[in-house]
Every structure is written in C-alpha cells, then in structure tokens.
Length: 415
Image (cartoon, rainbow, N blue to C red; front, side, top):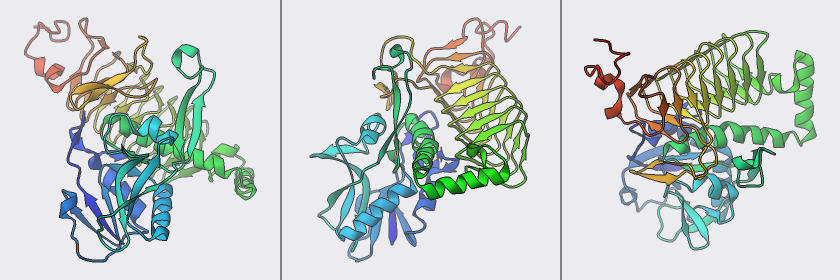
C-alpha cells in the first residue's frame, strides 16, 4: 500500500517547529508515524495540499496529515475495517466517544463534526482516489483512569479527577497541550491500560507471575513489565515498576522511583529522583531529588535538584534550575487557558502544568503558574522583581536580552 503524507507546516508554540519534528514517545513524530505504518505501506510521497495527490491510478492508498498521532492498535483497527469494507473511507468517531470529546477536541480543528460524527484527516482508498468517501467510525475504547476521591474543589466530577485513556489512540497535534496528551495520556498511560486489560487473560497473568518468581522480583518489576536496554547501571535500591521501557547506557542511582515511564538512551537519573507516568528523552540528566509527574522531557535536557514538574512539557537542550516548581492546579476557580493561535483558549482540563521551549535556561527557585508558555531560547533568573511566572514569557522578555540594563536586576547585574 502507498501512503501519501500531507505536510502541515504550522509551527507549534513555543517550540517554533511543525508538529512532525517534535518528540512523541522519544521519537520525532514523523518517525513514530513511519514505524507504526511500516507493516502496511511499502512506498510514500509527500505533498503540500490534497489536490497535489496523483490521481488516475488504482493503487491502494492511505492519506494522512503529518501532524497526526496514532498508535499501532488504532492503525490496525482502521486498516482492517477499511480493507474489509473495500470502499473509500475516512477516519471518524462517534459523538459520544469519551476519549475524543474529553482530550482530542480542545485547541484544534483537525477533528471536526460533520453530521452525526466527528471526522479526521486520514483517508483510505482501495483503488486510488475517489470523490465519494464514507466516514468509518473507530471506537477509541475509553479506559477510565483517575485519582479518585480527591477533594471536591479539584474536580467538577463529584470529587474524581478522571482521564479517559484510549486503547486505540488518535490525536491531531496543533498545540503544546497535545504533546503532553500524546506522550503521557495517549502514550505511556495507554500502554499501561492495554497491559492492565491483558492481565484479565489467565495465560498472560501466569507468564508474568512465573517470570517474577524466577527473577525473585515484585510482579510489576519483572522483565516482562520493565524492558531494560544494553549497558545499563541500576542501583539495587531503585524501585522500577512497569510497564516501563529503559534505553541503552542508562544510569539509575540509589533510591530512585520510576513507574510507568519511557526512559531514552544515555540518560542519567541520580539519587532520590521520582518519575511517574513520564517520558525522558535521550541524554537527559537528573542530578538528585527532582520529581517528574505526567511530564515530557525532550532530548539533552537537565532538571536540577528539588525541582518539581507536573503535567509539563520541556523542549530539547533546556535547563530547569534547582527548586523550581511548575504548579498544575489553578487556585482561582476559573477554567485553565493557554495561548492558541494568538489568543487564550480553554485547555479542557482541570489540572495542567506549563510548557518550556527549546534551548531555555530557567533559573533556580522560580514558581510557574499553570498553563503558561515560555518561548524557546528564553533565559529566566529569579530576582526581587520576578520570582513567580504568572504570564506567558516571550523571547523579547528573556533576561539575557536585558544584560546591559543593570537597573532591571541590580543584584544580579552589579555595576
């Protein structure tokens, strides 16, 4: 089957890059798409517009925009149903699909309502392009995951802070919030949901239980739940629970706790760090006692000691200073909003951290309010004038641009 990729050149703030070049599950999105579609497609072409797709042939074709995130389970279901139908069709979702309505619709227009379904930018043609295309409804398979019985002021759902995790994931990435969703909710948590469902099969449960007995490890820490690459050094006091994937040449120090994460290659996680439902990119460095919760670090990033990141996305080659805290709950009883195409829009979530762009240097002991963006290449230093980041920070506000102005930070830049 041939695949036709429609380029989406819109840049995602604050990274100033198109979605295809941003990291999802520790891979550029375009590479993730290629790996997922490899069993089905043997050739590809790229176009800027749908009208540029070659017509007149009768080749089986899959068409999609390059800002889409989808997993193997979704593609397998869609292609299987579409080929069985034998007619031209496009991806669609029911109006009551909880995954789509809860997490995929805010801050985007790539999934939109047409009639009594939502349609998306992925098409299947069994015999070349056709004018008549039918919506093919795919059920994402919502799996409820939540922090139940949290204080009622943290949720509008009777005290429950709930996520709808897909067993078959699909997302149009048009905002930094979607990078968080793709990595944490539709990535590592979705893998955990599939693993948990598989434990309902006695054969799978027995194989994992037998492996844990042979290795003398706790059930969630055996090699069937935790995949470890080559040449890794892991302190025996570290606690690692699956499903977790650890790359090559990784060092994990004493007292580290890791649960349901993806750790890239050449990563150093030193003493006392805690990581839960997070993605850590290649060559990241965490010295000691930092905490990552529902957070994505792209490659070559460092998080210093005692920093706390919750529901955050941090770009490549960035630095987060010691003791800096990214808050995730809005103290004011108003909906969380973030910048999207030049204006503030509701993020559709009760809790959400912030986003740091590429090549940023964030100083020590800062507090960042929820749903804020710090643009790429920004330097922020704590001072008497600025210890709490309560608004989005543009490149023009970067501290390094004000170095000649000693009056801005007199203690930082003495004359």
